Image (tube, rainbow, N blue to C red):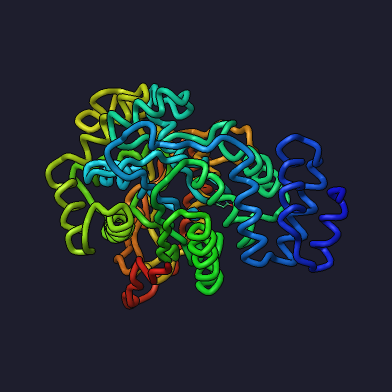
Length: 439
Ligand code: URA
């Protein structure tokens, strides 16, 4: 069936056969399907949706569009585990959780992405470390994984190339927020990475792609069911993104925050809650702990003993970065951008609500994210000391501190941030960071 017939069938609301889906994805990979046809297909799926069976077939076809890694031959000596988030602001979890799992006996071959829209990307954060090679060849990737127990790199041309192409088209055709398309996109990369278990952090709230909890819940169920059917044990946690997850948002500032977390110098409470909850699930999935209490104790021991920080340092060194990033972050990371201003609210009170998307966009417009795919990002800009919901704010308690390249950029970000905070007279009730577990 020609691609336009497959698109027409989906546009009319019919279910696609596995063979149609395989044919379309093969064309996407080979180039036989044009960008226009891929965009039309994505829009048809966006409006018509897909059954679980169709979504599973799409996931399988995208997984098989490239190479599949197989860690069994590497004799790692532990389960290959990973965590993936659907995207948030101040979400540094991967930087800490990968070495924490490694310190508990797991191996984390993490294929991570660049920032998307208003959300930050793990790859961009690691890109702020001098010398860090996020695009190693297969041999270096495997060596780093063996040496450190974790290796965080970017998607290569070989892994799920159909997703790489479709994703780039979705990004610029307003077709990102589709449950079957997100499911197939995320899981095709994870299935190609040869994992034994996956923990999904599905965000909901005003800084998430799925702002409504019911939509996020549907996405979590879709991910868990399609992954399980494909033989990848997966647990999803629904987590709150109605405020930045941590006190820092940007690139180098988030790496510094992750190092502070690993050393214990500073641990933002919500970041800690989500990191531990995801870590517990990962250890249970990998058979590295028998119950949640044991898993939690192991993760805390990995932090307290310095073992997780040491794994992070080993990973950075193995991938070409400085050897002493944990003890001495300064030479390896750019200094915060030169214009530093504290933003104060128009009136004193308590942070009652935060427009998280606006905070992410403020980082982006400071230069910490992209407005076009090929844009360079400025790793040194960002926000620190972001007040969480419930915190007092006033002349002595800023909403955040801006690190900007120019006075104009700092001024524009300060205006956006003041608007993003709703200040009230009383502290509000604090919502839990982890909302629900979905399997
Ligand atoms: N992350 C992905 O990798 N794909 C999506 O579609 C959305 C988030």
